Image (cartoon, rainbow, N blue to C red; front, side, top):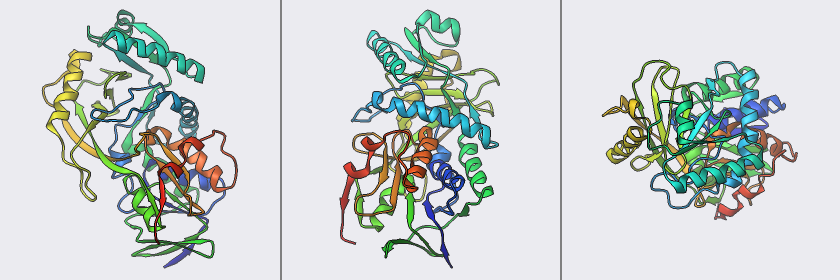
Length: 382
């Protein structure tokens, strides 16, 4: 099989799905290729938080801190784009419930004040509360909480709904999906990319590599070495009565998030590490991550604490050495674009918007040059 299109999108996770939809709406003929079934890796296994207010700078065990202030303009932009998708994409599973960011020490409370100043400058509304004020607003909070910020823009999207809904809409509007179609070759001949797979070849002037943990592998096929590292994170769920927790709760100094999904589960995230990344299978769970995550619940929301989780699972992500996102065209590979890294779930509609502008030769509404892949790129023999 051979097919000519305008853009080949490699990866049908939430970034790929959002990008396929945006490109299709901009008039491009789009083919979406996924190595397995869509939404079965990173996007479908994440906690699904929409990080609009500033969060903690380090996952548990993470060395380099995220420059959270630098990301705030992106968070404001993506927040508005999520609302647009919520109005135009059925079944997205979007819940803008609002969220608390809590502190337990004087130093963490000072961090809340600092981030509130940054958020105010970026146009993101947050309110600083004392511990008692936060407990009056959310009585579930424990006595260790000394301060909090509230952001009405925080929320989440159901991970098993959001990506598939975007992909269905993209297909309904003209994109063509090819699941279980791993890319085996990527070559540029006479200004056109040839994307090979066991089931056929696609040719297009533009390729968008949004393959998450497999992004670097795809780029390497084009002779570009990207300094990206796949890793795996661990999530948990606890049982609770429906309507127990109607907001998102996170910790400003530690990896911690908790909210209640549509099925009534309390979903715990926060970037706790899982075992080593596996190329084809889920990474193993780590007992110490389970213990650490449950201990946070016992402190912060004691009435919600359970001795053991209802479920534990892991999911892959891709990280950069500076723990910042990456988006843009690859040096030495004209027409090959990448997007991913930190906050990929939150930034999915923004990356779709930026990539669509870049593909069509326009200037994105938001300057993302700081996150260019040039800082991570080395050309190799090809």
